[in-house]
Length: 226
Image 1 (cartoon, helix red, strand yellow):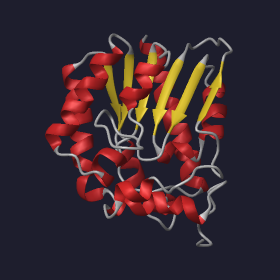
Image 2 (cartoon, helix red, strand yellow; image 1 turned 90 degrees about the vertical axis):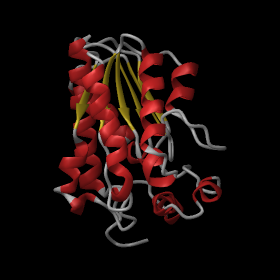
Image 3 (cartoon, helix red, strand yellow; image 1 turned 180 degrees about the horizontal axis):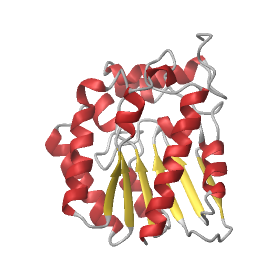
Image 4 (cartoon, helix red, strand yellow; image 1 turned 120 degrees about the vertical axis):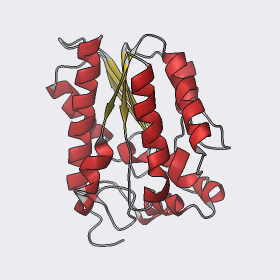
């Protein structure tokens, strides 16, 4: 592992996940990537707090920092909450062995405020077309009903060629749906490329910390809109 990869709990096997964003051998490789050395795939807290309940649905860019995200949500007096992150998660287009946001929404209780923090799977790995991404985004928003939904844009050096497809769908959804807003992580992370590890897809510790604070602020905004 590169000496610059100081993400907690990340092994060389985890860097394979980032390598998949190059788009070669994506699906076959995904099935070989374990997350046993990463933090838990889900964290939750049942305590009711002043600013309300929230669900965060993430991909591997969220996975490695879930414990820190839990701390940030508590700081903002959010709760109860549940945060779930899976490698290469997509919006709604099924791929064998890959989780989707829709799959999670169907199977779990979703709180009135929701943060969607994915995108690399849809555009970086599987290269879904703009039409596919927009249709998937619409499916997810419809399934969430009148909940307040925050969408995080996404970008990484590995996924930059296709990231605009996902980000355009986010902004289009916010223009169409009054219960949807966008927080522009892509612009922030482009200006701080030092946050990326050697795989150019996942974050070093400074990036994880910044990502957690950003998502917690999104969660607070969504909760205050409820």
